[in-house]
Length: 113
Image (tube, rainbow, N blue to C red; front, side, top):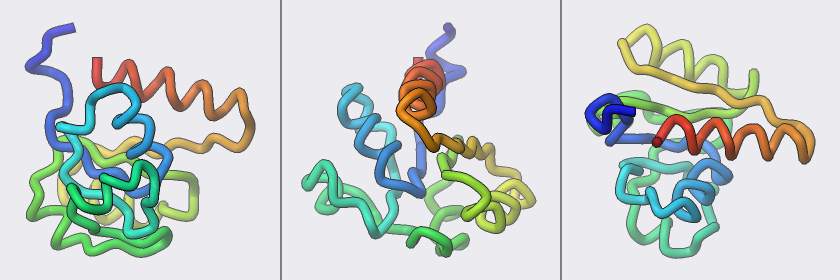
């Protein structure tokens, strides 16, 4: 895949996508995280907190100029809608099983190349 087509400024609205990107060695792409993130511990020190679980600071997210926002399920549908209306690309996962988690990891890996 052309590296220029891969997202470089990612906002993670949930902890599991943040943790996965760190485990993949792609933490340099993350520009914003959920305030509930505790893994890895260094993420709380390194990244700007822009959301809770069902609420987000849309203006702060937009200020970060993300080229991808990652969310979870219908619980974040309103956040996703507002960001999409503002022209941001959003991918919302809906993993609810071990197989779903593994699929999320594979998909996230593909999204970042």
